[in-house]
Image (tube, rainbow, N blue to C red; front, side, top):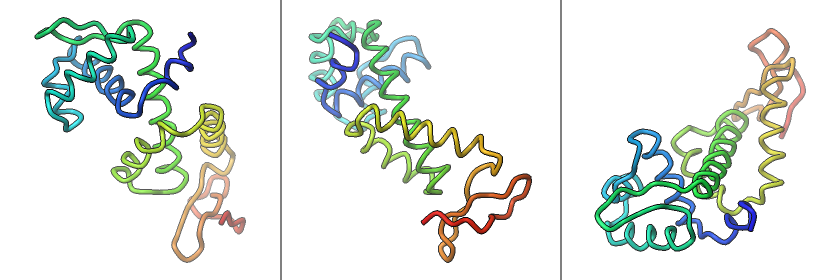
Length: 161
């Protein structure tokens, strides 16, 4: 079973657990259930159930009362979830100019349902806009989106609505 197939089989909630475990592991080497509960704002029994489900799928290593660590497959899935989240957040913040906290919340909601090919194209588009000679976009409520002029902080006449 491929990583993408395993990811499709996970609920949005379990994907959030994988991502949280990965971030905690990166910070502290291993994730404790209490740390996972705090990060996700859930109860300890919810963490226990989720960790058991992830362990049954071979995505985490866990013994009762011990730390939780990702397996290689679990890390690959968590990395993919985080990549989707970051890509969507970049689109929302850098292109649509949505405030970061709101963009982060929306990206979290979207990352679980957006097909990987659509997300890949969005990320390519973000990179294209960022690397273009225009250097990105500006947005104002009155004029909408405009491409920046090369070497200038003002927007050129091309509007993107």
